[in-house]
Length: 424
Ligand code: PEP
Ligand code: MG
Image 1: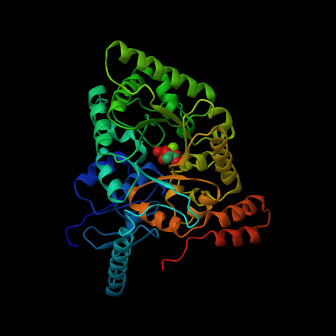
Image 2 (image 1 turned 60 degrees about the vertical axis):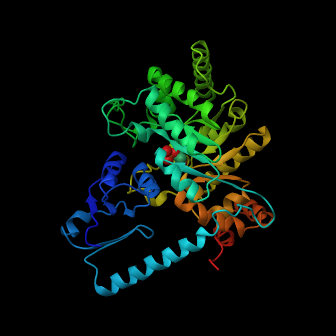
Image 3 (image 1 turned 90 degrees about the vertical axis):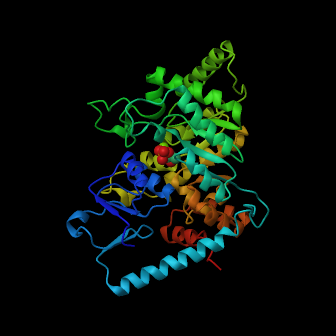
């Protein structure tokens, strides 16, 4: 409508999105970046339409004209004619009707036809996202990305401010809450944090996430103190991003134990039994999952990074985005190894990367034995619908054949069989 603003930019960072969203921007178009970037993930969680990697977009739009932003299909239409407008208005209406219908599933269980219960959790970026998580029937929070608390500010949030943010999420919770320790670096930069090293030509392979935290231990300890103190307010789990070897996991666990000692000495409350898990998002971690499982209380598969690192494609580079393939046999094998390692060790395995929210892969993941999915709140009911229409007995066989197949025609046929069921 007339007041809605569409931002058309060269590139947009997560920090820009937070600021612009607060000003009521209706949609975003960016000439660069891809759908797996943190900017795109944040936009999706806000429910704002966006298209990324639309080269030369700024040259093709005129200030003040109407733009249709079709985030589902990655299209933007500047200056649409009456026919296009009518068509998209109809689609908007159909989408609303479908969402209303999905709304009926909110309180229904996520259970397959053969009686397997699946745990559906939400990914949240900001404490206030909890509202839409539970509005969409989430069982809890499978991933709270804490780095967004650190954006658009000059100073890092201190222990009390972090404690307050975690406590808010825990107090709103209706199930377990998994809070991830800082995952800064690469495409998640903050003004107040450590800036990128001048020699880092491959920031995704550089000092990010747990690596940065283990190096900047003063900063990490502040977060660990806040997390542990928050653990006394509800069922909270701590998740460590980008673990690539056992040493990192053990070092982080050691710091957590030291922080507990400090809190105990100061008579500050925390949950002694707080669960600590590892994200599996580096191929080495997936391959070493049986070893990591001896020390981790749970795993969560981060497919956004796992696919980036396995296939050697930068997730924010739109030039190589076409290679981003969750169905690549190497990716499927790494997911399978992780799920099996978790089952062997008796620890839960979740998936919190975008693959978990994509209806094209739900049945495949069920067939691989995944029982915990975490995703942006807006996708929860659609995935629940598919789960309720699925029977894992048949799916396991199809997935085993898919993993063993070397014939691309057969693989396509098996993938067709795993497609999401039709709406009605
Ligand atoms: C992932 O890598 O899949 C993930 C969930 O973490 P992030 O997208 O924040 O890197
Ligand atoms: Mg990641």
